Image (cartoon, rainbow, N blue to C red; front, top):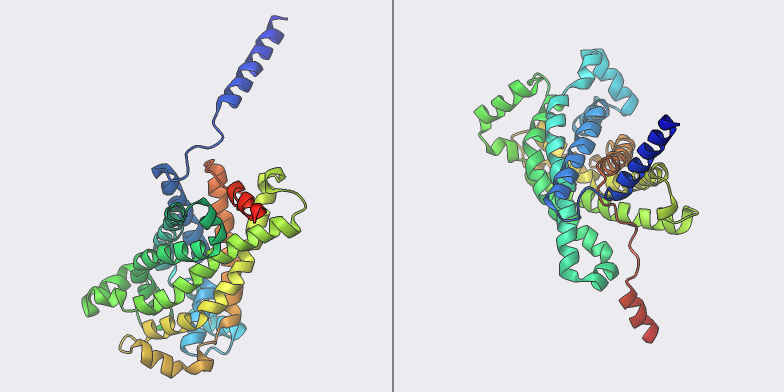
Length: 330
């Protein structure tokens, strides 16, 4: 009897403690919120890009030397024949470091700029012009994220596409610094911006709008009634849809970046001229597969980090009551 009373008292204390625990671990806009969002971006971008290094390697080689690598299957076959299975992992280290740094800027700064721009617009305008706000916030974030990424991207592409060049980050980075100076790491920054900023604008704006439409027209119940697992499934689906569009809008610039880094002596204009219009679209198929999967997994990991650390995850935007009253009065 005494044990039963003790057990009942224990469970009552647990219930009281659980009810007293705040729903979220921090507030939107706090340093902890931005820090954990940046950490989520580090994991989501660093891990996913590293996981698809073999596909990325073949894609880059198709772009740079389409005469030798005649498609995805042939590209894998030729690469393995010449260098063995290990050759498919070339560039994994600069990929991991570079895209982890990019993820910090991409997701951390996106949350920051979205919050800043929303405050500047005000509640009603932030709702009315939310797509423009997503585009502006993501473009601003990617501008800085690419500065973090560019040095490692330069090393990665040369490792993957230049025959006889270095095969590791610890040898490749010092070689660029020795032969070309710091400028060698940032030579591809302008085409990288041209590739990544439209990509990220599509990635975030398309994702946000797709989530909104899925909950409105596809998911049979409100987001608040969905379990965390169901919400993450919606996140994955919306991420994949956004990824397909991302791959298409950014592919020509991606081809120029690959060509530019593979030929250090050339410039953007000469790389574009050498590729030609048709050449800029080489490798689009593998890139759609890669970017679609990549974007879906990135959003899934990022949202999972938010769930794990109990970060605020606002529901899809709804029209403010003040705006509803104004429209009703018209």
